[in-house]
Length: 391
Image (tube, rainbow, N blue to C red; front, side):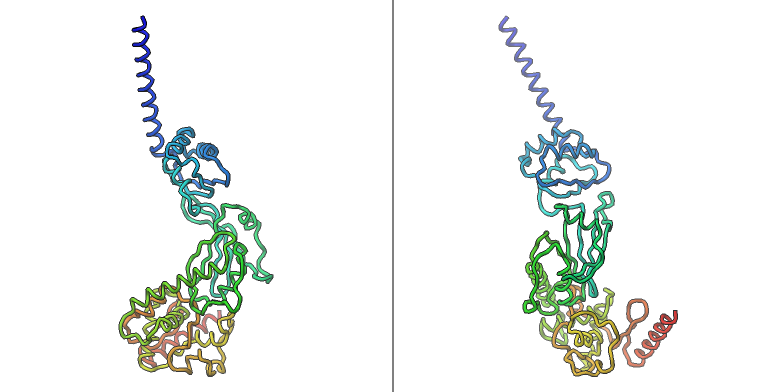
């Protein structure tokens, strides 16, 4: 009898073990298998969340089939205590294993709301945008122009106030090519999500703030941000200078930066940068004056504000060191913050015979080798200007 009971117990134990092994194997397959999501979602994980709360949220959104397996898998991989707050993009078909990795990996949020502060040549704009997880593209929800240091700006949208109160909101500062150091520093005063200010005697040298996109945390110090911009620009200068071609009409990285800033201010068409560089460098090689309006304008404004009018004859005839209609060679320093492509154009210009260029009415320029060709192009441009003025 006891032998029979022992035999039956052993059989039952084996059956239980087999069933348990089968359940474990099934659970593992479920954990790593493609998930049920048929389109991407943005999963928000507030600070203080638990793995149970997140698993229930995922199940409610149809992202996982079994919250218990999700939690067991997180426990088994020792990730249950590594949950990070943020807003995370979960792609369609993501497995439970992949989702656990996403929400415990850390780093910046990958979806949700982003505040983008765009610093342009003439003004700065605050934009609020939301990532649409299905298209993985941003949709703008609000835009306004802030007023730094108490200056009157646009009315602050209610939506901006709400996202500023959301701990998951991300912040980004975009600096456009061709800005001046003054414009960047002054505009940063309108970014209410960073702290501190730059004193007048601490302003970086003109041209030394790299145009780029900078992700920042709320409360970031403006000095740290400026230091990042300067470091990136210096890195670009060093890297690009090392790639320079032979025969350039300047000898130092500082002169390259000046040339790049002139190229940046003369054309907004990326495909033209090297051609514009060839014109200026051809002129320097021939001992001709650069004769470029942006340098004269910088001499008038000192890089502060926008001129907002045409140049006067007195300004074109002035003795300013930035008046390239009068001085020989290049001005004493940069007139703006050039981007990477302008730097590259300065050290590797196109090989052209061109010595002149003028606007062609399409946003680009007409280039010429001789003064006669240039005068004909100028006449065409004057006709276009007259037609536009009469409309």
